[in-house]
Image (cartoon, rainbow, N blue to C red; front, side, top):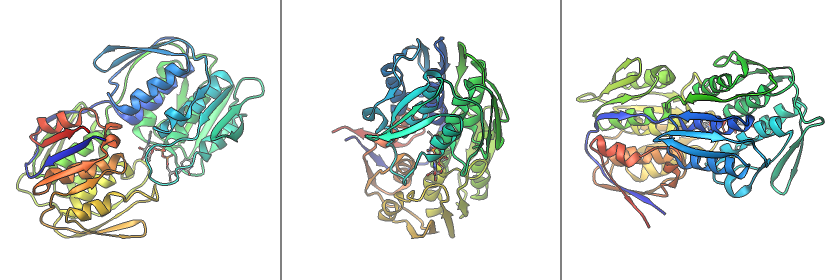
Length: 420
Ligand code: UD1
């Protein structure tokens, strides 16, 4: 298993190009299951989860071709409706095949998902929504099997009991080809939901209200070819901003829509960063500035994203004073805390909150990455710690950060991949 060896202590300084968003790319690639026509996608990040999505497509009869650094052409109609365990176990987002397959073929067999071990992460909301659209379900041998009476889903008004990002996405995709109108209430409002809606509309779907908590989808008979560029990754951008901040550096993130990061930028400014945004870039300067402690409570968008919680904890660990971070989305998302404590952070878990008392420095140590964003926090901690940090199990990181070593080195950080 690959490891990162990081020598800490340098202020990150320079410019970084932000890649396409993983969490937009995955649903968009799987949404191509809804058409037999050719789709061209740009700004597709080179990530393990994206490769898994392409593998899923080919196993279902579709084909794809890389036509540029981050551009792909996806063709052919889906012929198989099975998303097998071998692929699904490596990527929870494979559940996003359920809605499109059920809508396009009238039936699907999707293995129950694996992915990051951050809590139980059920898929009941996906299933319940599709049931309301007329699908029947069976759960056998670890597979969710859906079917429809006459091969087609029908529109329904669906009240989501809890805000779910992929749940909303599955229902939006399914509703695009359903007969009649679907209204999703208490829908997720994340920028990636908006991006998926824009992509579906480019294929001819009739969607209104994306970005609000009520999304209305008028089903159409058929979706068609299109060319689309995926939104950039707000979580990747936020991770580089925090890395620059924790190391008292200065960074410009290019190719990022600043509004997608508003809830994070508010907190970075509170923590004393100088932040300037332009149309498509974010500048952050933390040279000669103290890190101030900031309380964080994660919440669905437009709240503070749970996917930035672990990274922000490194800032609070180094802040001048005490603070708390409360996780409200996932119940087991503090696995980075014991590792940060091993590096000298003064943190204590109290229920779903972490109390942080800032320390002057962190110290390099051997640490273990446990999920994608926890890995990012350990890499940031390694970059600012005194001495050498070895982060084990970085395969999590490869699921979500394109060319991470190259980008960190371009900013002046010292990081090496040790393959074993
Ligand atoms: C997505 C993101 C992930 C992010 C998360 C929250 C993708 C591929 N992943 O994950 O990076 O951390 O949103 O912003 O976009 N829940 C249920 N039943 C369900 C579905 C969800 O109870 O059927 C619960 C979950 O356990 C969790 C909460 O709802 O407590 C939110 O989860 P959800 O928004 O669905 O997360 P994902 O879509 O899996």
